[in-house]
Image (cartoon, rainbow, N blue to C red; front, side, top):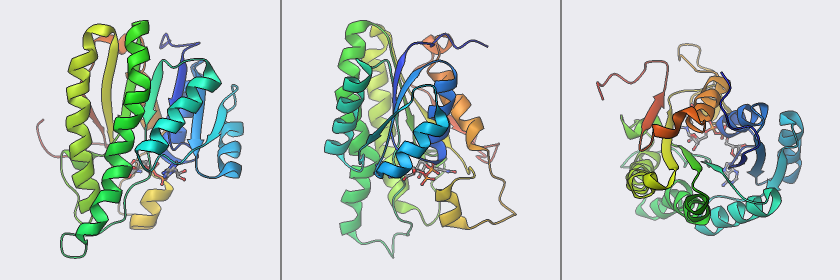
Length: 240
Ligand code: NAD
């Protein structure tokens, strides 16, 4: 299926590896002009080279609001504007209620909530003006079903989901859609760090996740907004 987005311009955050990389690679293969970021020059250059299709590598740390805003500004400058924003960042450290000090929460909220708010603030008004835009936030299936030992992630991602849903309804009439893609377990460095190479875990292929992100950015998905789509191979057991 032709997604109808060839020639559009996309910024994909935290894309030197994992789910961000897979999302950027799928969009680039669809003919989208993609700018990606990571914190390390050599790694992000290498990722852009592997993605090909003129992918632009930018060094940016999207771990907080100023970093998120700076990445979008650099992507807008590099691409001459923006039609698609895929927000992403690393995940916060593991821990439960007992082991996680209050002082650890602000960093997690900066990383997985405030950076998204800032990226949207920097990108969405121009999308509204041009009457076309797509925002896809990579969050987590933990929004539906909080994961044990990931209390920081569970907390920050619930907040960002409330922000995204509110934004989606505010900009729907301007041709801008705002959705989130919620990964279950996918075979990435983050999952290897958390769970090792545990063979009993059913893990998804990041490329399959990237394909869903690209669909949410498509022309065909123009009437799909405010959705939290879990991509988890059926691991979430709830009805809604
Ligand atoms: P990952 O750690 O494998 O890859 C993240 C990439 O982003 C890495 O290249 C890393 O260097 C880069 N990055 C990290 N922090 C950054 C920052 N502050 N600024 C710029 N670049 C940064 O992670 P992943 O598995 O691809 O996961 C992506 C997101 O999805 C994370 O927030 C993770 O917690 C969440 N998630 C992943 C899964 C999964 O199965 N992989 C499941 C649930 C949630």
